[in-house]
Image (cartoon, rainbow, N blue to C red; front, side, top):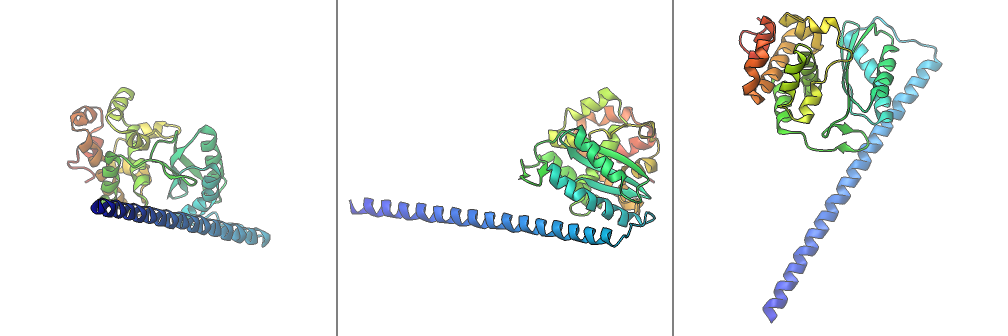
Length: 280
């Protein structure tokens, strides 16, 4: 009888300890989220006040700026929009004064709102929008955080992008830039067939640009293809390395499709896909 009482007391003690630990972790997590929210709010208010002082002083941004400065200028405009629309961060790339946008939105109206805001940024002479309509599980909204863990296939592609030279935090944008541009080179049926073998979160990165132009359809040379992705135009060698790494990771995910895809590509782009003799 005494042993039974001891066991019950021990089990009760363990349960109480576990409950206390869970509660402690929950409190810490909530506190961390509150601090992150406050930090975002502080950054936003600081930027808003700085912008107000800028306009009161009657100053105007110089349209003739370096690509890195123009990219920062575009991102500063998109930040409040992303927060208001509650959409994942839009990835911005700049080549000369052409801005390339990659990301996901809920609907066409959100895409138009973002594109219009970017076109109004001083220094932007041309916009190439690769915004895809329709958020997928795994996309991160400012108000919710990650909805669902990324698929193993997406993780492999993002790891490959980083190994190829994409900096931490830019892997998704680099993968999206590569795959969306690659999708324009495939006939409709072959593109659909290839995408059917990939999980939804990876298919989302291969959404076609808006709109698909004749310029997209006629990227016959590897250098032109890499330049069209907009990945780090200041370092073409690194951009090439990222493109090859991303395509190589996707190729490894669908070995049974390698030959069929290669058959519909121009010679140089076939080299990119097959990973042999590419970008020499």
